[in-house]
Image 1: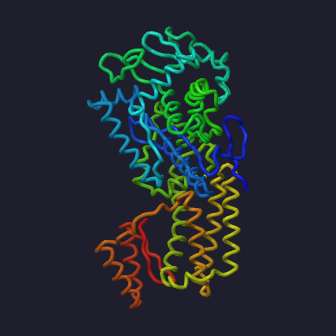
Image 2: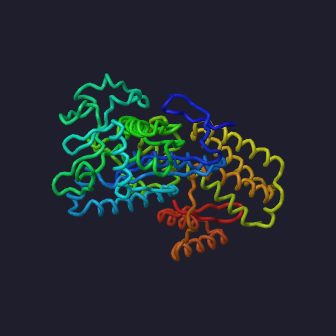
Image 3: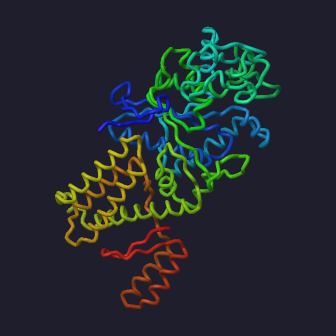
Length: 468
């Protein structure tokens, strides 16, 4: 098998071959940190976490860089609103973003460069573009000459001649052409700024990623990722800037995830239908959120509804329960787990793993990969019901699950839960009631615990509990 990736640049699936065997350079556009992460931000976060996980599982060392845009117009307005500094706004929302990442079971990036810490790189990049005739200064601002870059529009399939004046681009009399975009913005009185050859100011949005990707990953990276909304103008402008400067492709593979709709409507600020991840996490565990995100192919649109989340929660719990039951069964005979699994289990697990990898290698087809995980759930449940099953069978089941779950992380690792004194007391009382065949009291206690968010499971190996 060979990994196939749909490349937005060519609009086709291509065999993935990194520039250096066993090493992948991957850049994913990060957040502008002026507010909390919303559900639309969460999709690329989870999608490219999954991509990175799979690349690592098949033997690659992934240098995964995602930036923080910690200064721009939105942060300036937010700082004014909060009566604080731009730097303080950035710190508040970077911390909140990282908390959400952890809450979604997302691994930390290799590096999170910040715009404010990369200013010299950005200024030098712009100066080089100016020296090559791709940039020009006007009224303290610096613009990029899109007409000079012949391939402008190749990623998004935009035609420069069709970018109508005043419709697709911002009208500005300081520009030579209306489709030219800003590289450096002159600071207004009182605004945060940096010194540059063109006066006090700050960088435009597009130049940031070009400068940081080049500095930390080189002239050409293997994979550049982001949401579909970034194809134009952001990624298109990145291509124009970097390739004009280096004469090399910015990225060999471009990946873009689809939009998220809220109840069949496009999520937007004007509709006021944005959902914050911190609020969603109050209701749903990471596994349920990740299941929802990965149960649709990353390139397809995704519709967020109450019903879809509840369904995802139920499915994720089914997977987690099977894993938990296998772990519990294995704990009863840890020595037996060191033996050899039965031939039937070994063959079934090999087939499940082969199916999982075949789906993942087809442009990260996570919906079908999840189907392979449910094949595992069925096998696990059947094995649990088999009194002649070997402990080694459960060990093999757990290992196979761990390999798949390392990619999708539908049951992210958590600390062992502690029941608490009141819960433990009720559980002990219920065990005594069942021993005495007091089924009425046993059912009452189950209902009490259920109201407290505790689910009881009577298994052949004894009673177990878990939180909803």
